[in-house]
Length: 513
Image 1 (cartoon, rainbow, N blue to C red):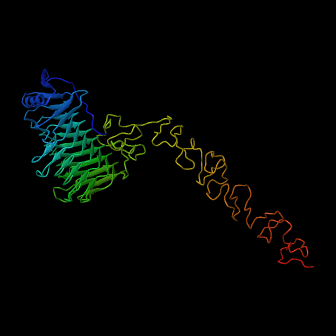
Image 2 (cartoon, rainbow, N blue to C red):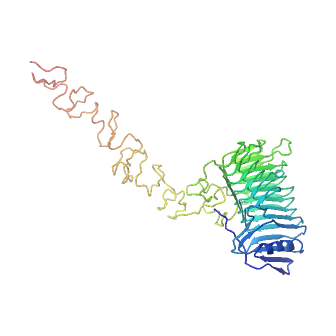
Image 3 (tube, helix red, strand yellow):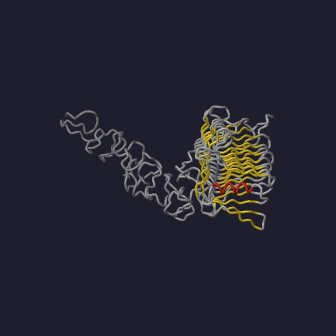
């Protein structure tokens, strides 16, 4: 996935375009016009959209918006534009506080990079609403640092908060290489009473938190918290503070708070205190001894801990290397392909990059959906087809060697290197010869004959060369008393020629008469 490309908007001048629907649209192309647009939008009595033209917006001080109006704000890149807001490692990037009851906020298609905060919360962005919905999508938050611990929040990539009743949505975002002195390396998410959290198709990678929640820290009072198809890997809590949560730390205050985690890769995260290295649920923060209900379905994760180990739903999760590429796509053969839950809450129709989510029989686990390729058109994707170039819809594999019967040029059930009679054995290790018993690995052409009444070497002769077989055809085997089973004139009852030094009748003596 790498550096997150931006979806964004039209190149324009720093102009305001009001319309009859009580809304204003700003087109900005530099830091000065962006600041002016934010200041105007905070008090113009309209719902506002600010479109950023293509380019890098380099800051020496933070951008700010603080409004008590009951109107919405959208801050987004213009269509086709690549927009970066860069702090140069010296300033927080954006402070945005929508205090009105209907003060909805949307951030879309912007790269936030190199933010820094020393004595305040959030190095990248700090965005709050009172009761309005807060939506952040198709954006990235990278290389943001906090220099000191400010209370306990101290988020680095982004601090996102809905005070009450609204919905906080993070979708299709990328959080990487952020460092927090406290909690919330990639993101700090907080919602009050009646608010809900939805986190979908996000990637959190290589973020650090000193205390807890290196990938993301989530605090919910009595909320539904839904995480679906996120990829959270390589994040770490660097100090043993007893809080844990290298990937996620989820703090639940009320017994009615209900996090549901489905189809997520939360794997390969670490915590210095070894507590919930992938996920830690602080699920009894009101201290009444009753655990808030938690649900984990169809995730790929390793280490999960709960403050109170009760009231858990844990179904169909795996603990396997997700086989991610360097840019966090699924590689061919990943156990996460087609392993997701069809009925996951808020299951997205598209993946992180806009590809169709359901390309196989089931959704994949994680932010990326592996492309469904079916070369032979038999309905089985190449990633799991045992004959990808030859139709084999039922996946028949008689010898269970992983190759389907229709393309297996060595059908060898007992795996002794020889294919069975009437099986395709052209390219078996033993060559194009027939195994007369392909259920017994000790029976095949060239095997050693033993006394067992079986044709071990498949030459249509039983027990030849053994003491039970009459090798010289004189009617007597060694077991029958033949003392020389390669000479038909030597056997019990034969005429013993005198004085020739041979015991023809096998009585133990040469005839001396």
